[in-house]
Length: 284
Image 1 (spheres, helix red, strand yellow):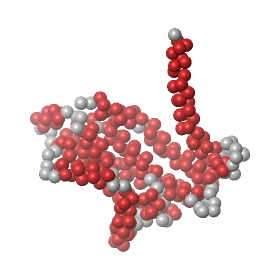
Image 2 (cartoon, helix red, strand yellow):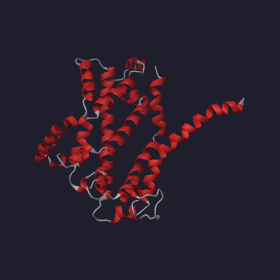
Image 3 (cartoon, helix red, strand yellow):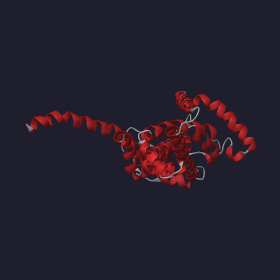
Image 4 (tube, rainbow, N blue to C red):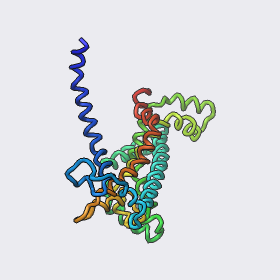
């Protein structure tokens, strides 16, 4: 009987191994390419011709490659965007879920409607606006990382508000009513009841916002033209974006290093992420 069950489950193990292979193989290629100074991704062999860390050292020693500046810019923008978008989204979700005011339903529908249209439709308008802002406040205008930060948080309210509102709706209203009976104000309910209960989904929102902003390329490539002010995604593109030359070794090495903060954040927040993704299914 056990042999029969083992044969029936064999296809599941085979399928799992195939999926693991397809998932891990691109990572293997990138790692091998970063260790091959000859550009292993373009060679006929899946193994490096010779192992070397020259691609990694080139990122930090070549004066033409401000890699540390790219990483710093990406970390600053992604961290600031994650924190700000969570704060704005949480406040918006609390207002839409717990308060009753004129225009509430229209506001929710408007936020949902805005998400229907792809973001690249507004690129030209945003470009002109940031160009005008640069004439008044250069630090917040076109070509600045803080101007790009303003663009990111401007587009983060809609999806975050809807995500957090869906979670907040599962928290019983009796908690709010009990707090009001005890004399709690709305800000106290927000900080002392909503925030502790919503910490898992807030962590999920922050991590997703950080990863999405860190990896974003289209807006960053359009608004950051100065080499030193580029993000790591835009900066690394110069290695493979040439018409006649692609340098895959430094590109792969830079990608490996850039993935380290994302892995650290994901692993450190894993407990909250799992709780946030399953919170909606266990509440109510």
